[in-house]
Length: 549
Image (cartoon, rainbow, N blue to C red; front, side, top):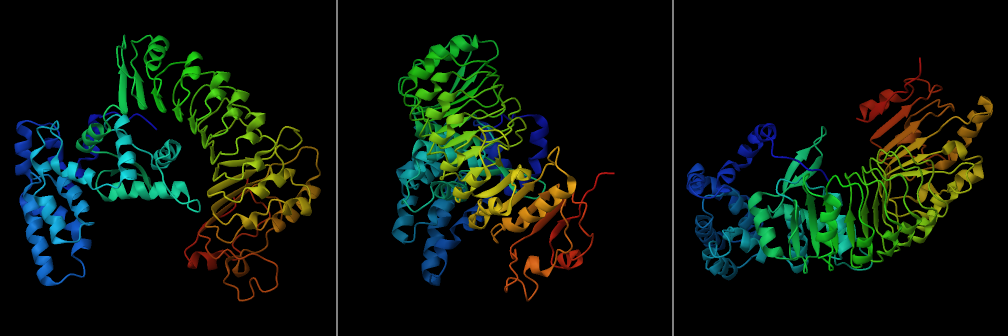
């Protein structure tokens, strides 16, 4: 996660987007006072009705004209109670979608909550009603957002993993917790309790945000269970009941002393996100945080993690991304309940703990843009529950590193996998051991070769050709990239994509019917253009080989 300020440039950049969604009035409303009256004038009832009607279409579908007319009449009265605020109309409209009878609609219209705004700290009544409409499990997940500062950009994947770590996700044994968590997140988005914040170049959603008024609601319903704590020179806070905290330490504070004195007062702490330039975490606190389930020290200046971190037996989420830690203590391997270990943007770490094979609960091992590690530790294949593994890096000649055959047991991997060290696969039989054809949940695969010093080039090429022929990834792949392959590729055509009528009929080849992107990099022996025009006509994204000059 990253801290994003409320700079003027950002305000201007997003002004147009807000006006398209009808949220300009919300910016006025959020300031309170006379501006709220201006907000009510900014959009007439028809604009607010439009936001309400967009949300209730499911409730009115397949109804008689008389039934629809009755509900629309009640809906108009509900809209009047939204105070001219599009956000309120969106939120309450989403809540009405699940209410199918006139009696349920009238119950909302006559609710005493509409008159409770001033009593409950100025929280919008429409948002309170929306919160009342949430299922119990979703209420826990929603209140969790109260620990983050306002204007914080939210990463969906991280939030879902934090929910899982806290035990908020309830599902059957056969169901995937993260998938259920993503459905929870999407439900909050549908109810207008979350908004899209940022897209990438390809229009994929990068981050989300929570409107200030909704954030006020989250803080209200969370009470003392969740808290954003800002420490200055002195911390005189009562944190006995605090369970989840985002801790901000100001620059002028004596950081280590303030963190120690503050967190020692929170023995029930289950989650801590630290926003600070602190360079160390006092070791004594790891003795004190026996109930801690999630610890985020990312983007701090911490250089060393105490070995006592292994005493956190309940720890399920640990984020050390973009820190200065040079070595993970072996004690981390004793966190046998750890589900997520994030080491992204980690340049100094050279190896992972040898005992990682004991971490049988690990589901996500992330190290994006991680350039220091040379291999994964031996025994990584025992972590059969792994869903996220950014890279599979073989140990080569190092006895402490994992071997190619360990990939065989990691059949729950999802999404994207990068494999480096393929030059260490020495034979046809060894190539078969990984059983890539069983990795049905992977949609992107990146294969990297590196030249082995001392080996004759012709021998290396022959070995590469044997290995690449045997690998046979699963046909569900959507993206395939091959780097530095020295073998010969004479044709990329119908037998590869499934266009050829003879593909897969006894030829022994693999057809990738779902493939959308194919990239060859540093592949000198590919005959340029062979089979490519056919791919382009089908709309594939193809990159030709790039050769050194």
